[in-house]
Image 1 (tube, rainbow, N blue to C red):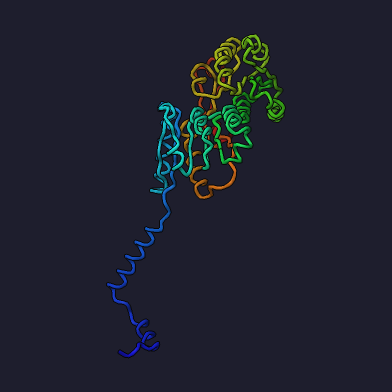
Image 2 (tube, helix red, strand yellow):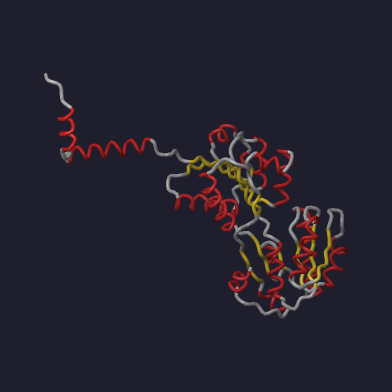
Length: 326
């Protein structure tokens, strides 16, 4: 058999390929590309407990990721309240999402070699958990631990105070052990809005009503800054009691505070938290290396107690009006 010359090869390559051959080549290419497609990112959700807010955050994140990135993520869920060991789940994960403080506490003790994002956690709780398990916040960040803290920036509450009471001259503010270091910064923010500031710092051993009343009495509007849970619970009823007594409106940090008698509340809803978390996951999945970060809330919810507004003779515009200016 005579060998095939280079000229005959060139002539053969110039011939049009039959349709059946093109179809086979296309099928082979599709099979090959499917075989080399990126594996799904394995997410492990650590959830403190299966209660309403935690489940709403979990399900909203999952739904948002599924809608925007079909088949890109594979999620496993563990509830810390189950009190089991999680070594195998952690070893299999590419990224860990903790929802709630107890979940962060549990995940951090394993010190996994993958990024962690903690949500539904306050700044003070994140600082406490980071120091407990990593030695400091900086060390936690260096180990690719991140947090989207639930505390809304106090600047938003200050801005809202001036929008609600343009003629306010003095703004009272309550701080606790974890937030007292913010006083110089907050003084400047309040001054920039044309108001004087009056602070009360509450320690766990203090009698809240004795310390808060003089400040409330001299204020045109009052803002409690969220601190540790003990301080928040111990002071809330007295703040609202004094607000009613002295006719001083309160801008609060939770929907329950609003329902109990505050004029307004700016807070992070489960939907707000979930939106920012799914955005973070989508960005982080494309660049998993690098240090972690502590983030303030990007989104917020704002609501008003119209009964309180009426009793204080404070005219309210629409929620959209205030949202557009904050």
